[in-house]
Length: 170
Ligand SMILES: [Zn+2]
Image 1: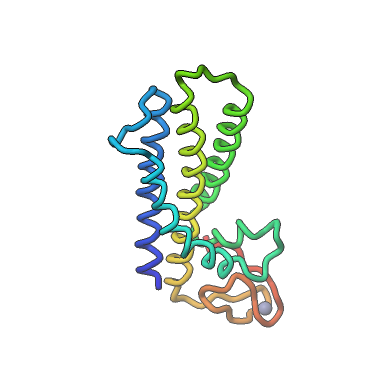
Image 2 (image 1 turned 120 degrees about the horizontal axis):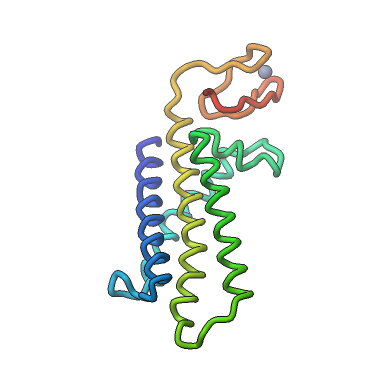
């Protein structure tokens, strides 16, 4: 499972960098940096989101809604978890800029591509982090114990006996 998760997380990371290039090119006025309609490249998101949605549900099960991201991404290093919020924050700003700032008709196409590629950056990055988290937690070999010393399954975030939450191991 961890090998497949790693592979999907790599595809998602590749998608992230592809759309980072599309996004930057759109700022520079280039609507087709790869010589093709970026919407076609966007279909790749389906490939990574089909496994990401159930993975997120699996990793965050038992958590309160407000903690679900923290719990699902517990296998990620802290910087990656924070970068997720950074990317989501940027996408919100990108969206607001598109809605609020006037766009010259001639620049409409690149402005739309900036908007769409911005959203795709968030989708690809969260998919990358979720699959990376799964790869990490399913690889854990050592025994984890809750504060009452009950043993936890490697992929579990919560103690099945007392319900205690076990955060990152580091
Ligand atoms: Zn316990």
